[in-house]
Image 1 (cartoon, rainbow, N blue to C red):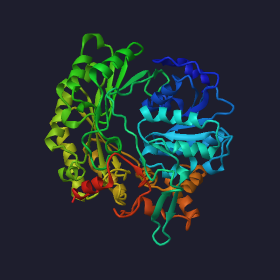
Image 2 (image 1 turned 60 degrees about the vertical axis):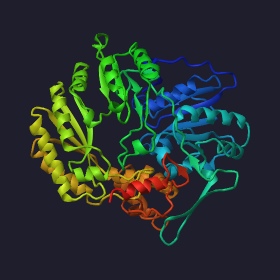
Image 3 (image 1 turned 90 degrees about the horizontal axis):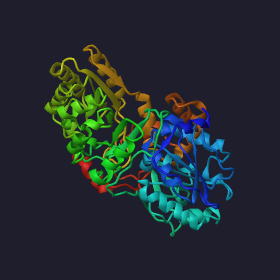
Image 4 (image 1 turned 120 degrees about the horizontal axis):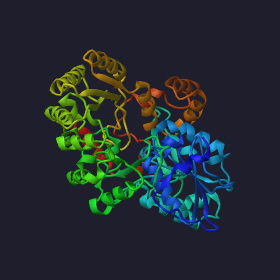
Length: 533
C-alpha cells in the first residue's frame, strides 16, 4: 500500500500549520492502516497532536506511512492488542533505533507509548519504552508535550527525570525491580532515587464530552464508519473485566454538548454511524438518543452499537437497529449458570436473557450473538451443562432467530479482583465440550483459541523479565509453540510459563504493576475477591 491511501480520508478537524521549530513527532499504530485508522483512540490522539502548531506529527503504520522526519524527537505508539508488540519492535528497527531504551543515546528519539494494553500492565514491554502514558489522553498527552518542551534540548536523563514528575507519565528505567531467588516472586519495586515518585497513578478524564471520529475513510476496516463514544467504563463491574475496572468511574457523554453535535457533524460526511462504549445502552438518556436517531431524516443511515446490556434489549431498540440496516445484536452473558454469574458479579437473570432474544426477534433482527466464557474461577462441569441448556431454551423461545455463542477462556487482568487467579488448565477441554454439545443442537459455536488465551495471560501478568521472551518469539513466530520454545531456551533465567499463566497468586505478593495505581486500591479489589466465596 502506498501513501496515497491518505487521499481517501475526510478530516473532521483542521490540522495546524506547524511552527518552524515544531517538534518532529512520529505517531505509529503497530498494525496495518485499515486497522489503525479504525481505532478511535488512535484517531483522537493523532488529531490532538495535529492541531498543535508546536508539533509536526507524521503517521506510521506497518504497511504505509506519511513522509517521516529524518531525525524525529519523539516516536509514539498506540497499543490496543497484546501481540502487536512484534510490530512495535519491527517498526523501532525500521526507524533504525535501538530496541532497548538503555541502548539509546542522547541524539535518538524518546520512544513513548499508551493505550489499554500499556495502561493495564506495561511491565513486559518496559525495557523497550522510554516513556509510558498511563490512562486517558485528554489531559495527559498535553501535559506530556508541555513538560517535554521544557527539557527539549537537555540530555536524555534530564528529560526523563523531568517527565517522571508529570502525573500519569511512567518512566520504567527510573525504577528498579528485585526478584526472589527462592520463589521467583518480586521482592521490591522502587524508584532509583528520592526525586522519582514511588507510585504512578493512572490519569482519568472526568468530562462529559467524550470522543468522536476525527477522520472517516473507505479504507478503514469498518468502511466509512463515524464513531461516537457514548459512555466510558461500565457500571456493572464484572470481576474479571478490565474494560470496567481499569477505566472507572463510569462516565456518560452529554446529549446536548457531546452526542448530538458529534452525530450531526459525522453524518455530514458519511451515513454509517457507530456508537461505542463498554455498556452503551446504560447511558441514562439512551432512550432519548434512540428516539433522536429514529427521526425520518436519519432513515438512510446504517447504525451499529458496540455493546448492549442484556436487560436493556427492548423491541424499540431492535426495531431501530433493524430499520438502520443492522441485522444482529451482541450481548455478553458469560455463562448459563446463575451461580457463576453471581461469582463474577454479572447482575443478570435467566429470564432476562430469554426476554432479550424474544425482543430481538420481535423487533426484526435476524441474528443474536452471545458472549460466554469458560474457566471462570469456581466453574464446575454442571455449569457448562447449564450453558447448553440456556442456549436450547433461547432457541425454543425465539424460533428462527439465528444464535451464535462466542466463547473465550478466562484470562486474569491487572487491576481487577480476578488478577490473582490463573488460567484453568481444563478450559480447552471445556471449549471442546461446548462445541460438541451446541453444534449437535444446530447452534453456531465460535470458540476463541485457548492457546491465544495462554499468551494473553502471560502478557497480562508478566513482569520485566519477559522482554527477553518477547524478543525471542519475534524471531520464532507468535504461536504458543514459539513461546514454549523461548521459555525452554531461557530456562533458569526467569520463571517457567506456568508461574505467569496458571498459578494462583497470593494477595500478599508484590505484583508487577503494584507501583502503578489504577482507579481502585488493592484493598477494594481484595474485598471484591472475598465476595466470590
